[in-house]
Length: 254
Length: 254
Image 1 (cartoon, rainbow over the protein chains, first blue to last red):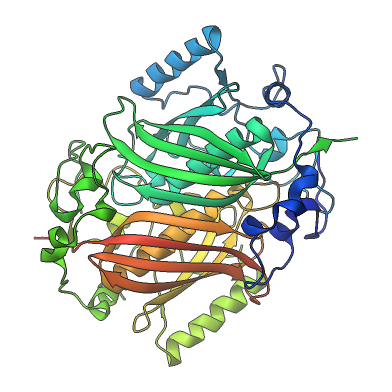
Image 2 (cartoon, each protein chain N blue to C red):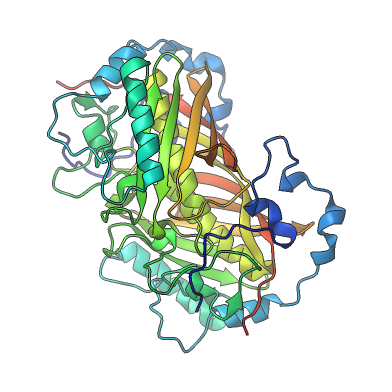
């Protein structure tokens, strides 16, 4: 595992603008000439290899994307339906660990990137609330060949925005998290470059929503994704979003 | 305080599209003809009246936007600087309660809107993490006449995205929260209609960032806001965002 270094914020590869102090007047990484990024346009690992590494069969790390007593009958039913699809179809249930350091265990962050400590209690934001059922309850299923995901999501009372309904930011955060796992497994997408979201209906706390994420295209080291959030019966449309992720390959640790 | 009703999701006023099952083909509320919204274009309360109601001097509710032992010297210094400005200038430190039900205490939600219970532990998403310093530490200062806000933000280790850095969704959620308080106090902005964000640099966990939010314009019952997130010394630009909020007046409770 990684050790804590200094708060190093140095430059690295094609992602340097993400970490160095930039100027507001400087060209955004989104608009940099393709030529500057082309030397990293091919990534060595296939989606199958990434998925195989991501979904380790033998691990002692806790998987938070498993049913617990707080899951409602609707959540359980949908979970079981998708679990069935992992047997016959090409769907895979993704594990969800406490920290992204656990997800990328054995992989090296880019040179100069800040590593985190084993000793401190780091958590992926969408797993920040410990009490079952109070915050984020979700599970992501991924379809490698179609490069799409389904996230089943039961928001608890700690995700409040308008009284009784989910906070817009809590929904976006889970969209971003589902984007990020999909982007990584579909083609080394690591960093969110931009997100756009339009809200249409509010999600009641305690209900179950479904986020449908798809990779739209991969171009110039950028992965373009879309997301639709709706009710399980697809009768209520909650929000739609799009996101762009930067591709970056992580090397094997020594 | 409000009592829990059924999961009522009925229609109300100009915000009906936010709660009724809409069609994906139907016109978004963002694109509805101005005429349909014009009858609610004038709102009765001034910003001063809204601020006065929002910042009650005598309340037994806990204000989470006050210093605690986890605040770093940088966070404390910036907080004290802005606190000084509340004495001489037109800045106001906003309180931050556990739930939005507390923020709108004594006000009535639109007819048919779902009310929450006193008995359940509802929390504004950005106050979802109990342990001081582990999640969101932030305070918002608001400038009523200029309709702008500053949010001082110290992200803890539970807001992780890339190892050691903040999750993009955690930053957006706080931008949305700062937008929402600013939109409400500036002109009854209640619901997020859309958000756009572009990321430039990652925010290290444990550091302090500053979100600068401004109301750009108010038009057709919509409040348009912008946000820049940067380091305290303004040398590192983290992200910029824009948001649109729907105006809606809450009436006095009986």
